[in-house]
Image 1 (tube, rainbow, N blue to C red):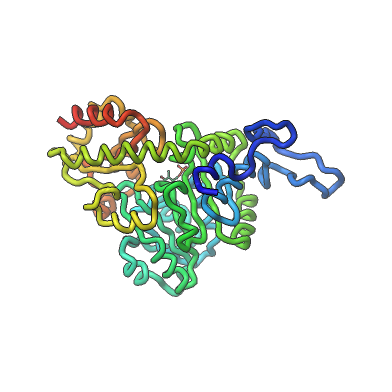
Image 2 (spheres, rainbow, N blue to C red; image 1 turned 180 degrees about the horizontal axis):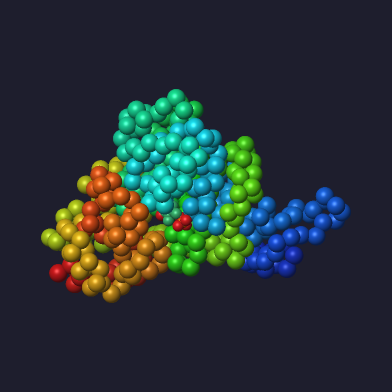
Length: 377
Ligand SMILES: *Cc1c(COP(=O)(O)O)cnc(C)c1O
């Protein structure tokens, strides 16, 4: 089955008992047992719920994994993955990792003695150089937020194998429609499903898939022990989102390419970050390891003042955090998503005050271009 067909026919479809075409929402916490200790497959919804299970099954199929898991947020999924590690372990991470992940590592998990190094993972040699005796995992985000840096996943797979490290990939920006890290050597792939997978700015959720039954068992134990599970209503919303993920990503890709072309020709825009442009440093790798470039473009408006002006003038770009929705969203990372990263660290990464990030929606591309054009004037 190809990916687009999997999105419709993969996992658990419908309801055998009634013929309902959509998976029922099992709004239930506990399940009657036939005799003490003999449940019919489900005992308690933190441990397992049929609606969540249907979602987890399709996620495993989309990512070509052994098992899938659904969490109450992307951060809950990431936290659960980190729980695979022990105090004293070290992890090498992409340096412009999602702000919430940065905060989790530097302000929460550091207190449990989980050590980490931030590396520009778009340079594989820097990754190798950062590996220590106690390094147990590589944590990669590609493309990154908001600078769209690309890391070579197959290379990371080789490095992970050589040093016996767990390779974890945050695949939020690419989605399983464009990029399947487990096929390139990753052990765990995870998503903020709040973004493209949900796709309609109406649910907060996290998903992950693993490449082995052993990891599946360990993640399920952690998921059940720490309890950050996704509820059945939200699980259903994600399944609905997944059905249109393919066509949404294609529409978003189409619009993003057009906007990138427009921005390239605008004299007020200094730097454009979009892996679909041949001038982007990661373009060739992105082309090799993914079938699409995604729906995020960042560009430098010169200074914070110019960025504010543009934001106040646009009509079709909603000023909001988050990304990956049907509506176009616009933000200034330095003041919004990346505000929790210290200013000197932001400067180091190149997240300037004038940097604007756009998450392109599925509106008519010509309307988006006209709108941005008048805002940039
Ligand atoms: C949003 C996001 C997260 C966190 O997910 P939540 O659903 O907001 O908890 C993690 N990684 C990336 C790349 C994200 O964009």
